[in-house]
Length: 335
Ligand SMILES: [Mn+2]
Image 1 (cartoon, protein in one colour):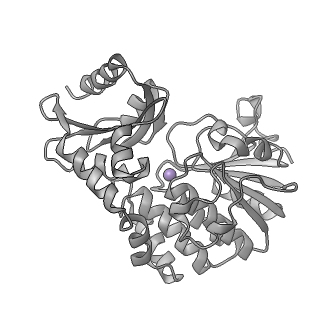
Image 2 (spheres, helix red, strand yellow):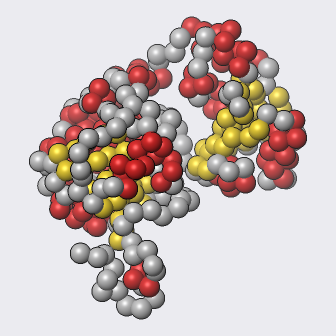
Image 3 (cartoon, protein in one colour):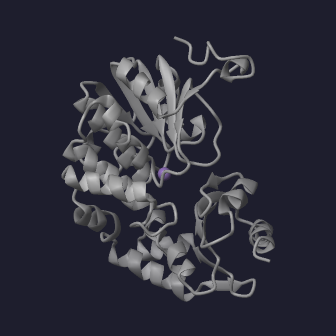
């Protein structure tokens, strides 16, 4: 079947790349497939891993053979999620359908790209505002607080009740992407789905402990160092801090240990944008957060990155000029 084939001129069939989209189309595709590959973006976060594993458990409950593959393999930080130990780097065999979750661009799946594109059909499930279409099917919902919310919505169409394992993974996805329900992306639907997941046996306290309360002492000291040395600019509307390679070595911390810093900076009254620069070997990894009105995804895109309205990221080179142009881009939006 070619989706969109029967469309009127000017509809999806007019595009060289015919695309079928929406929740019902996604359910149809999943129902038709027997063996399904699930993958996500490189450097996966809790939504990427949680929604991948949640979909895997849901599909298995529906009688499907589902495999999760990730460029980064079995992610230690999310190892508490049921099924995490089954994540492979290189999937074996052939698949009727490949699904990429939380992923705006096919290159973002890293080394899994060839396996994904070799699947009979390819589907993209995402909640980012901007992306480059790939595959034959897409299920997009920019109003979803996390992809986990969208995966949970597939259950009725698949004719299954969400099993406890899927509930735990999907709850982790939503708790991580909303930072414990703190963002404006949280809707009544988000909360209703989370209540359903808890009803299904997911343990909210366990998820929160595993996602937020497992820092090393060095990591907390390094966060403290960053919070002591942050800068305020543009009349106190921008707060920014830098975590250097030397700091990472000294405190034996890793980049993920610094995830809290931008949010702490954003908690300062009057701050609209928080910026954290994490030094890597070749460049700076940039995290941007905003409170009320600045579209940080637009700023990140200017520098080759992307993300959401209130949380985005990019990379810049290690030069004072690159940093200045980033700061100026933020400043121009704070007037
Ligand atoms: Mn996400």
